[in-house]
Image 1: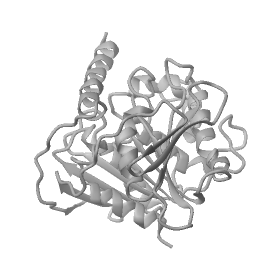
Image 2: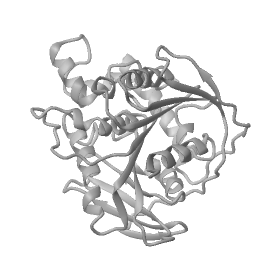
Image 3: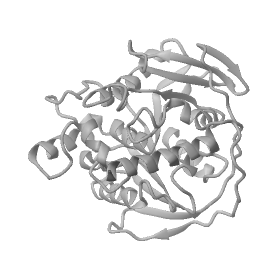
Image 4: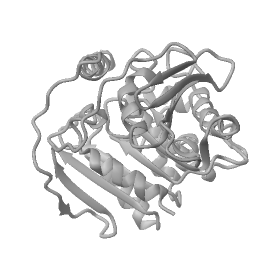
Length: 335
């Protein structure tokens, strides 16, 4: 009953967010001046900033395309398959070309507690359109999750396959397969950080990839960096990793080394974790823990807390601190 109540509460939050984000309208937000200040953590090498609710870019709402190609105000988008299953699709958006150079690409991964009924790739349409308007190509992916066959190890295999499919996309579309970043939200933030860690997976794992796509950086928005950590989705982690998350066991510890970003550190890849100060679904402490450990192990990892913002505000460009996202992407892709 406790699990059912938790899921119902989360679904209600998702529905509310859909009303705010996915229905083309959006809500007006109170905008305040940015106020960045440092906060200490257990690790002195971890940088955490507390930033007030702010916005520097207002995004326009976008209409989802059900066709293979659609021209829009910022370029062209294509609905493409990266596998044979109907869930193995992604939407590639290309900005309007300003030169003959291929575009850096941002892979975008939606959340939803790893449950298909809670969210799909359309949940990130407006966000993807806003990133594309910055001059980056975006690959907004779908994947099998719980409810559509995403039990262990399928969900991870799909996300891995979607990421590596960028090499195939680069054969047809003007994207730079050597300049790729990932942005994920909530459970998608977990998967974004996981993609950064694939190089640490041992050869005896079903998730091992011999030559995973190189990634320049990851932005995790309220990401579940530790699948055994305290968050509203934790009771579902058993199904995606294939072993009980409690009690501790040798099989659990081994599985975490191939599925949970915190336990898979270090990555040697730049990571930026952004938490909402008012987030009650994935608390900011999860980002604090990850960034502190990453920095201690030598990774370049930053964590920001956006005061006053909740779990879903982080994927609304007209509400969140959008310039932070822009600056992070610029840092990833600089020469």
